[in-house]
Amino acid sequence: MIFRVLRDPATVALIFSMSTLRKYLAVYSVMLRNSLIRDMNFKLNFLLWMIVESLWFVGQLVFIKVIFSHVDQIGDWTKWQMVLLVGTHQIVSQIFQGFFYVNLINLPELVRTGKFDFILLQPIDGQFTTSFRQFSLDSLVNALVGVGVVTYALYQLHVMPGWGQVMLYLATICVGVTIHYAIMFALSTVSFWIIRTQGLIWGYYSIMNLARYPDVVFKGFIKFVFSWLIPVIVVTNVPARLLMNSSATPWWLICHLLLASALMLLASRILWRFALNRYSSASS
Image 1: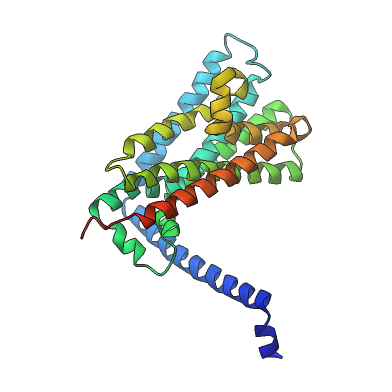
Image 2: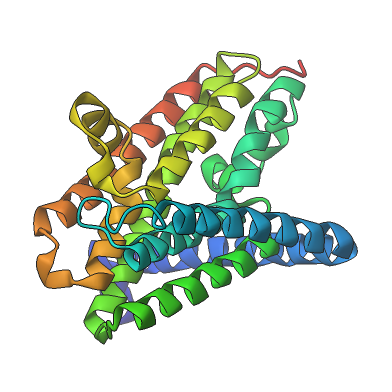
């Protein structure tokens, strides 16, 4: 009976996939533990970054208050809807920073110094190690601040989203994080041809801040670029609209978000494989 099961290709593939998944989860748990230990060894740095990020977030809320002291609405966005949008941007950006940002900005330096060779020698996929080597706990704490702001904004709007809306909101947030990851990972991969790509990476990090503005403020070619070519606008606008009123959010926007994520991930993976095939160790 056992041999008959093992002769089934689908069963063998499932067993192999489960074994691979357990291996990657075990590796990630080790990297996660090491990152947490490192953060706890530098508690002051941990607290300072939390304070800096919180002050930056408060500055955005003050900016909204100043704007809406002169106008009642921006397009179809009211004051508390804008607060909800900024809170959503805080959640997406801080989750991205917590899991990926530090790792991606370090990739160019690993390639330049030849330390990237040690990643290639490990018995797991190089992209996985490159993307998840470090974890920033302070960013996830700041993401919880965004959750609090979104909750308070919903209270002010007298909106009580259902569980379906909340789950769809969380799913679209995850999709938005993958878009940021795929774009910045592709920019980091350019370091295989260019010595220093930090300028490109930090440039995109600045572009990410456009996601905290409502989509109605963008017009014409600018809106096309940041909705389709570099889809940072939909990363936060779609989840925010879903949470406020899912029935008023066109489903094509959700499909747009999913398609953008899939295409960005595929393109970044192809670029990564292409770069590895042409990589020659800097340490040799």
